[in-house]
Amino acid sequence: MASSFKPELVEMPIGHWIGDRLIIDSSGIELQRPSDGINYASCPLGGPEIVDQAVSTAKAALKTSGWGMRRPRERTEVMHRWADLIVAEGEKIGQLESISSSRPIAQSVSIDVAVTAEQIRFFAEMADKEGGDVVPTDGNHLGMILSEPYGVVGAITPWNVPVSMAGWKMAPALAAGNAIVLKPSELTPFSTIYIAQLAIKAGIPAGIVNVVLGDGMTTGASLIAHSDIAKVSFTGSTLAGGAIMKKIASTQIKPMTLELGGKSPQIVFPSADLKVAARCIAGSIMLNAGQTCVAGTRLIIDQRVSGEFMGLLAAAMTSYHAGPTWDATSNYSPVISAHQIARIETIVDAAVSEGAEAIIGGKRMDRDGYFYEPTILSGVEKDSPALVEEIFGPVITVQTFGDEEEAFELSDHPTYGLAAGVFSKDLSQAMRAVKRVEAGTVWVNRYGRSRDHILPTGGYKASGIGKELGKEAYKSNRRLKSVLIEI
Image: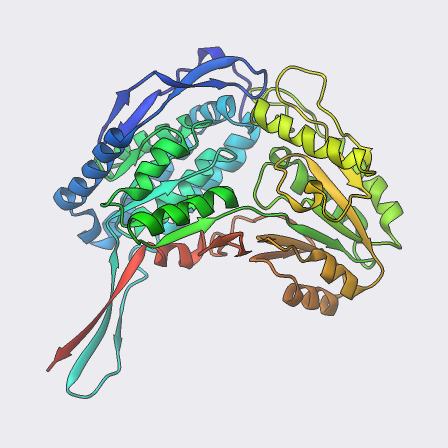
């Protein structure tokens, strides 16, 4: 159970983690705590030299340690020890996470830390269970498909759930026999540094896990363009993902996995259990104050039940308790930064000025930090940024439909296709919706991931390329070699 703490007493691991040591660097980007806006630390700004040092260290470590060539069960066992240490150090990780990010300490420990450990265990068990094939060929030949690690994987993670996102990248890459150089967001770097330190304590060879700190323009660009990075994995905005694709295309062609933005619809049919739907939809938009790529930000509801449902949804969304992320009783997050809350204000204010109605919320909370009121917008113009852009805040729009086909038409987004929710007790209707909605993940009568890591995640359209989690994530960290032997 997470407990409250004093953030000023927590020591931050400020520096780059390369090999088996923290390279101290306290100059760089000034950071503010989202809960109160107070400066608390600075994030180093790693340039090409520090990136090259990390990549060179990773490449050398693969050669000297034989990590990718070890008996796969050895990788499994050491990664299980790593997961054990993450659980044991959950309180410390949660403190680091909640100071810099928008994640309340109770959620950081009970959800993020626990899920990260589970992800590591899941991929650890794949190390000795996924391999190549002997394939049928001409009788005078032996045909094989070999599966091999890439080498050094470059990964970039976002600020919204830092430790969990680090697990998404590190676990499949390491289980598959690669080394990794990871750049966390410059806004939330410290929990990632700490779990990298725990990897070494668990027995993962020094240099196989490296973390470089800095921004996207300098550090991230240097990482993805490095000639010894064999594969890139990125989670973040569609705009940044497009820039990464362009950078890779102009420097050195290499495979990439991109998990990008979303503007996910939630369709409520009249047969749905409205109380269940209201609870799920409120949870999807209130989790991390709407700062998740899969946040269900577009409610599409049958006009016959919209009046009753709005009351249920408003009550559910306003039941959350806002407070500093280090307060164990808080379950509602601040927005990550002054810049981000200003963007939310601009989008919502523009929608209201164009005729939209804020059923609840619509403004910044009157308290320290970057807290925005839970907001429901109705009557939003179809081309309004509130309806078409990824807001990354606790804002949900409402549209009504008269029949099933209209619901499906409203659900389609011209840009995004990451996730969707469907609420209906009619199984046939639900299955029609599952097949009709263009999204990489569809939840029915629930919203949000479970802890079934076998289910991959990734979007359609501009919501991404490739998959995270599941067997697909492991396989995307291995490359295939065809072999034909004359007998």
